[in-house]
Every structure is written in C-alpha cells, then in structure tokens.
Image 1 (cartoon, rainbow, N blue to C red):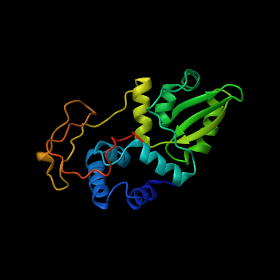
Image 2: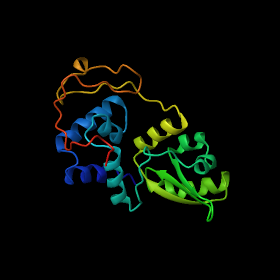
Image 3: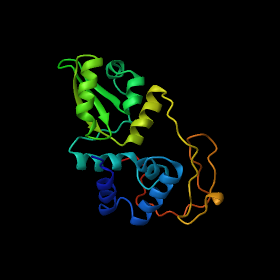
Image 4: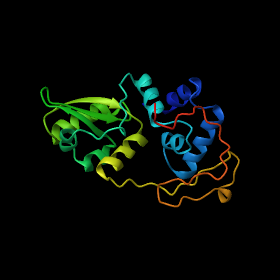
Length: 195
C-alpha cells in the first residue's frame, strides 16, 4: 500500500502546500523522473521534517529526522551500505542491551520483508522502525555513507507555466540551481527541514 495518495491529501489539507504547489511538484517530479517527496523539497515547498511528520501520522510509525545527526557507529556497523541502498533504508540507532536496531523506512509495507531478510542474512537483532521519506533516506545515505545515488540533472521551474527551455539548468549533477526570479509563494519563513 502506497502512502502517496494519502500523503498528498494530508499535505494539502493541513496547509503545508497548496493545490497549485502540489500540481507543480507532481509535474516537476514526472518531468525529472524523481519521487514527489524529493520534488517538494527541491522546489522548497516543504521540508523533510514536515513530510516525515505527515508520514508518521498516516502510518502510526514514529518519525525521526535523519539529517540532524549521524547514525550511531554500532547501527552503521550492523547494516552494510550496499544492503541499505538496495532497500532504501537507513540504520538510525542501536541499543546493545536488548539488541534493538532501529531502521528508517519509507513505507510500512517494508516491515515484514525486512524482518525476513534481516534475520536470514544479517545479525541476530530485533528490528524497530521509524519512518521517513525515501528522499530523506537517500540524502542521509549520501551524507553519512557517501553512497552514490543516481540523481538526474534537475532544472527547477520558477513559474508553474515556464517552458523547460526557459528554466535554469543545474550546474552540478543532482544539485538544483537557485531560481533567478522565484515567484513561488512559500508557506513559512523557516528553511526546509528546520522544524
């Protein structure tokens, strides 16, 4: 079960993004071949924290920001970066006394499969879960493990009706350019992910 339809509805009805911003983000995600959550953050309509909180409310799994602090060395040591990349999961923390490894996932659908795979191939730990967007998990894997994630070259529109040929081009692979004249209404003064 994908949480995407419910996430879109929740973000709009909780006034995190407007209908117009969601439409722009969906078009941008489709054109660039990226997930909607990444498009929303790239366009600065919202941040990872707000998406994570919304996912938490929808899934009843706690959200824990992934970019504020590195994972514990024990957690990082219990999961190979190759395995984390393959499943787009992130080792958050490890509690040695009860041997609980907390892993960030992007969908509750991963829980049964990860339990099976982890206990068959990995350390004998109990798994606990936290939820985050796929884009935040990928960003954390890049930031803390140096994992190379394939990212298309992005061009960020400054207006919803702007033609692709009029858009500024990214100067570094995977890094969007600053818009020349941003005409996008922002919903808060706080920078994305600072909540």
